[in-house]
Image (cartoon, rainbow, N blue to C red):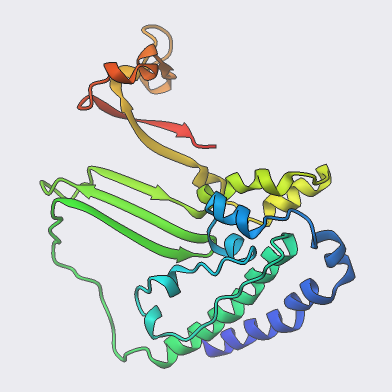
Length: 244
């Protein structure tokens, strides 16, 4: 395992990082493109490498350590340019930090086998909130249970792509059309993370009374969705929507 870590670190140091620090082609294509300033990054609420490339040292592993991260020594790479090059460089530097964390974890791994709990777990009533630092930034989960069974009553997920994508508006201002794919790719977006679930009134969703079978019918929004005062809070259903 250590040999794999050593090989990865060697290749990143020898090949990847020089591309973003000394290659004239990469500098010409990426430097000064898709700039997101520190103030804009804070205003849009971006997370992860996108935030760190704009000078915001945000990292949940450091700000609110979980698992064994409090025992690990690592740096949080931060760049200030806020452009495509900075976002790519931050990600490359984070690979080196991940290698350092892996070495520490392997050196301090307790001996023996480990298995998760096999007994049935009671889920108490209430809401639990958890945050972790994913490759793209902070991932937030909020789960609410009524305590009657192990099925959550509500699950709320906020992915880093969902938090970062609105900032593309600022990055694209003044950019050339050919730069648009490069700017968007520099966020490392997960497009499936843009599809979210929300609760709405059952009165706001109507199915056509004729046509295909219920499974293939498309929901139609009724005027109830525009009249909040007439909604019944207890009359809820889950409908899917595109967030962006």
